[in-house]
Every structure is written in C-alpha cells, then in structure tokens.
Amino acid sequence: MTPRVVEKTARHLPTQGDPDAPDGTTEPVPAAVAGPVPERTGAALLIAASVLLADAALTARQSGAELTGALFSRRFGLAALRRPGWALGTAVACAQALTSPSGLGFGANGGLIGELVRMAGSVTYRRPAKVAMAVDAFALRIEAAAVEHPNLDSPHARRFTDAMVAGNRLEALRAMGALVELHGVTRALTTVSPVIMELLALLGMLDENPVNDDFSWVTLAGGVPTTDPFLGLPSSVLAFLNPGPGRAERIEPDRILAKVLATSRNDIVSYVGDIGALGNHGLALLRRVACADGAVRHVLLLPGTSFGLLRNSTPQDLVGAFDGLLRTDTTYTRAVKKLLLRAGVPTGSELMIVGHSLGGITAMNLATDVEVASAYRLTHVITVGSPIDNKRPADHTTQVISLVNKHDVIPGLDGRGPASPNDIPDSWVELAWLDASYDYPLSHAPQAYSDSLRGELTHYREQVNKLISAYDGEVVGNQPYMLRDK
Image (cartoon, rainbow, N blue to C red; front, side):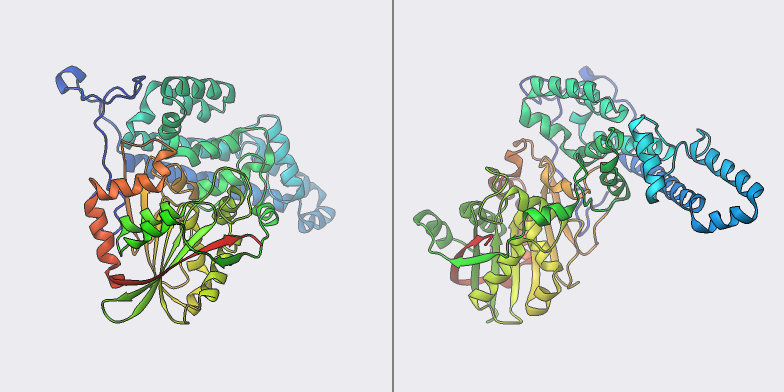
C-alpha cells in the first residue's frame, strides 16, 4: 500500500529468523536454506472476509432479538387470544427458527425473556450461529495479523491463539505458560499484542459468563466497549470509582526537571523527553511560546499512567486510565481544565496538547469537549502510544497526530489494531512502526518512542515537526502543575 497522509502501513520490520528461538535472536535465514516461501492469502482479503462474517453475525444477532421481541410482544399475545391456532403455529415456527441448527441455533436475545434464554444457552455451552460466525470473524482477524506479524505464526503462539478460538481456556493457559517459559513475560506479551482485543473478545464470548458478552459484540462491530471483558462491569462503575472534581496547583520544577526544560524546543522528540522527565506522579506542564510569526501560543504536556497502584491521589492512576478510555469527562480532564483557568490562558488562544498513554487519551477527551473547543483554538493533538482512535475532536480542524509502536499493547485497547477492519479519518496523521529493540512494557515507555524518532525514524520526526512548525519560537514560560483528584 502506498503511504498517504494517514500512514497506517509504515513500519520497520526486524530481520526474521526463528521466532521460537529461546534467546529471541533473529538471524537472517538464506533463501536457499529456508526453502520456498508458502503462498499466503493477503491480509486485506482475510480482513475483508472477516468483515463479511462479522456483518452476518451481527445481522443474525439482530434477527434473533427481533424474532424474540415479536414472539413475546403484547401485540402477539392479543392476536393469540383471537386466533389461538394461528398463534400456536407461529410460536412453534419461531421457536424452531430460534433453536434449530439450520436456523439461528439458539439465537434468542433481547428483552427479559430473551436474555434469560440467552444466558441459559451460554451456561449450557450452546453456541448459536451468530457466535460461531463471530468466532470465525475473530479467527480471520488473527490470521490476518499473523501475515504481518510472523511471531504470531510461530508454533507456540499459534497453539495459544488456536486454543482461544476453540474456547479451550485450560489449553490456552498451558500454551501461554509455554510461550512465557520460552520467551519470558515481556516477549510473550509483545507476541500477542497485535490481537489483544480479539483475544479478549473471544474470552468474553466463549466463557460461561453471560453478562460480559457485550464487550465482545461491540469489539466485533468496531465500537468502543463500555464494559470490561471479564466481569462485564459497565463504565458507570469506573465513574463511581473516579469521581474526583480535579484540582491543579502551581509548583516549582525540581533541579532535574528544570535542567530538561531549559533545553526544550518545538520538536516532537523534545516534547516526548519532557513528558518522560515529568514522570507519572501527577505533574503536567503548560508552556507559553512567543512564536516566530509574533503570536503567543500555548503547549500542554500530559504524562501517562502510574502503574504502582490501582488508585492514588492523582488522576494518573489505573482507575483513571480505564475511565479515560471509556468516558470523556474524567478527573484528569477536569483537573486540566482547571489548570488552564488557573493559568489564565486567554480565551481564543491557540493550544497544542501532547500526551503519552493516558495523557494522549486525556488530550483527545479534551478535544471532544465542546466547552474546551469553544474556549480555545485547539490546533493540534499529538498522542504517543495512546488508544484514541474511537474519539473525534469537536472542532474538525484540529490536527490529530498519533504515534504508535506496534509492539506496544496499549494503543490497541481502543478496539482498533493491526487486525481490525476499522479505519480512522483521512485527515488524521498516524505514524506506526515495528521496533525490534523493545518488548512491552518497554515498548510503551516515552524513552522508547523518543529513541525511535531520533534514530531510524527521523523522517517521521521531521514530518511531525513540519506539521507543528507554527509553534516554532522562543519558550517564554514553563509552568509545571500538580494535578490532584480532589
């Protein structure tokens, strides 16, 4: 595929060798030794087939819901009183269509009775036609990802994904154990990261828990899950766990941070380095720039998540991360809006937000906020390793730039990954690559992204810097803020 503005296919592949080598080496394999390369179906064809199957599965699900709803509707009940013979025949035909293997195959759903029947089928291991087609669609997505990620096609990885597709959780655990034993935890996570959403969706669809199926169906349809894949807990639970009004306090930078900020400039590598220096213990930075064209513009830097605790006193915790992924009004966004007010950023000022991980999610959440879009001219949102593809800015002129290391698990949590058929707006700039030097979680670190951009990806660095050249000028203010939940 020829790269265009949205450079989805740009990547740097490592030299392929033995994907199951215990030491992770990737020595080149000469063609004469490797033998003929087997013909593979193109990833695009596999994705196209998965889309057709997904559409069929979603249609079957909708048909089951409509048929169930009609069968147990008040209107049908009233008609049955007038024409009991007709009603009995109709009910038998509907029941056969809903339960017959040649029909929807136990496809009742929707409404109180339909959901009870569906749950009973799930607990008793009945696999409706809609589920069978959905599983096949996910399997094709995994196969498509394996075309472009050869490590997914290794025997150990294939054993794991095949077990997940079959719904054999015990075998999947054994296969993952073997993969971890062979490669270690980080390399094992890196291996399956391209299809993490597909694997979670398969887990939710094929387990005996009937209340977490929505995650799987939303993922299949290319939407944004609003429940977790394990227990089916809704996003409202996260809102309950993360209710802080948000607070922002000016602080003075410590000696190390001050030294880093003293050399900062309008350069994507510099911004990522600044975010790394801010850390993930609650700090954010507002920068004021006297630009070359005479205008004064502002840059906001937002770090990502602290993985130390599930919750802490700042918005940069794991609860905040899941909350930001599923909702837009979060403690982090509320704290940042108070930061902008406290800093006295004039209404109508041009603003660029650069965020890593949760910081990138929060940047997009702010961009979707009509209040923010009305108060400021949000010119650019730059995200680094962030799952933001399901969100859209309120101002269509906001330039979205997304940087993604495809070994990084986190950007795929929005439901769109290498195996997903869903796309992003043509106006977005997505620069994605495979970095052979880092496994997850190192692949997610700001340092990994800055190292890549200052190394072999200097052309990406130059491309981003050209897009943000309006912010070239003299830095006249660097003010860190401590963000708190309350």
